[in-house]
Length: 263
Ligand SMILES: Nc1ncnc2c1ncn2[C@@H]1O[C@H](COP(=O)(O)OP(=O)(O)O)[C@@H](O)[C@H]1O
Ligand SMILES: [Mg+2]
Image (cartoon, rainbow, N blue to C red; front, side, top):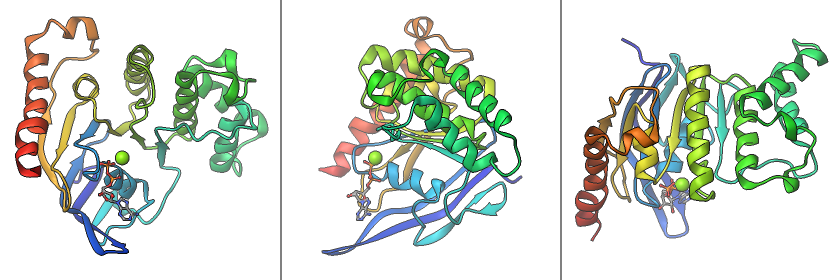
């Protein structure tokens, strides 16, 4: 059976001043439609490099990536990307930041009224209708990330790609955005690939956690299936032994298996 997203034997070699640097090698991953995958691993292991391959921002040196049976050859509106630092345009309102992206994707086919409706729907999805006319400097870090997520989702991407989207936020804001993200993914059924280095975040959100070995020449070490029932509630999970067992497996991978080989 074909998977929705297929990464086949991907390798990434960068040319650097000191010569060639192999960041990733032998990366194989099949993702089903609607799956939520997190990529976890130590800093510098190649998580962003892998996500950028799927985004089409990097090309593999060898190997191939397929989305819906078509080779990924560059960025496209079928993949919405959210980075750690919101990357909103500071001179535009929240509404206009999203509208700009919506217009780029749907501008040829839809009326201004339809484009505005799409933009409002995206703001609504992240509960930010009230902030439509505010500029990024006038809202909190958590709200900026929500606008970034709304902008990505407004393009109705087949795949949502997020690179440590909550990494710069305080713990409480992060928790509420995780809850919001679970609700949004449930609503939109988006296939999601998210980079994190937070073990609890990975277990809470994922259908599968892809654990990467340390670089150079990093690859996928283990894949852990998270079969905790949904919807997931962080308070209930705190008392769930399965949750703690899964969490322990990720920690063991990161801090036992990886540190030995990194030394
Ligand atoms: N454009 C580039 N040129 C050279 N080396 C790079 C480039 N991008 C990333 N790297 C190197 O590849 C490795 C993986 O980087 P990255 O994917 O950013 O790691 P992570 O996101 O897991 O922290 C690192 O050693 C990094 O220095
Ligand atoms: Mg990174």
